[in-house]
Length: 475
Image (cartoon, one colour):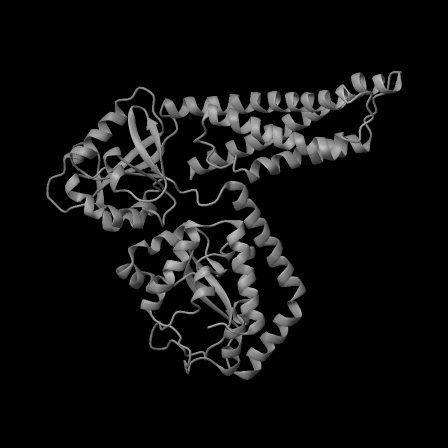
């Protein structure tokens, strides 16, 4: 908890200093225009007036800069920053932001020659980049040194227990400068009585209990260091880890048996392969979330009369509540309550969990119509608004069915890397699943979605979903 609070304070400090840097840069540029550029145009000294427009700009423009930084993911992972990457990122963002400022605020300035345009652009870029990076370098350099001195660490779990695991552990621990790995223990792959690594770290269980270990010990990194004889378990290990909010690393000799997108990262003499968990670029993730919020607000407000009518029909056609709430599993395996208009009779699951079928007698007459038109899903816009779900994403399932799916397709946990959605590629292509085998069949479409996740794909899925609603052809 304390570590999370310190992260929050550091994130807020980055935001505050970025805001102040942007305000200082705009103030200096304002002075530059009044003192050097405008006198050259008018032929006399221009008085510097700090009017309401100046102070409005001094507030709104730095706010816009902070929002731009946030959209690029700059304020995420504040303990894991690279000074070189930060230099490059600050420069690119400065050029992008200053170009927008130039066309919005500077292009209509009074100038003497076109040379003044070039000077204006160069000066605002110079002021903004230098001041912003100066503050960022101080914060990041201080954080990097704290990580290297082991003052800051990330709870790290080793998966493996013998020669490879011990060699990796000793190599990382022997480095004078740490890269943040704070080893809390290891989990075994094959059962046995003696584990070499047990002399240095506590054994926290077997890899089949990875989810519990990660959650109980707040693990942030998992390093897979298994033996050659244990490689057949690799797919199962990664399948579990990919559904959790952890960074997954493997030792290099496993590279040839890995699939998917990976990148190499040499860490304190121990080269490790980092499995790429970045499904969408941060700026696309920001736009996706903003669109989720704005679209949900629009639907909940504009179509509120439709909701009232549907709710009244549900209420007066069959006894029971209007809204049906049920626990589902969301991003990183976190449970949440999903909301729907009730489309079944109240005792639908008195004999335990059961999937619905096309001619399911538990579905009410109006419920059958709602399912074909997807009207029963409307309350989920509230789930989207509060962040449990997205407009587009794999449909969330109950833990009961996830356990059954995983028995047949361990890669289901791959879906837990993203927010579940109201609609999905699997929902559009396949519709509602009537049994576990159909869930597994639909799974391939959702895996394809995640591997090709983009704003463009989201837009196509939303268009097809709207057509299904208008035609009433949902399954």
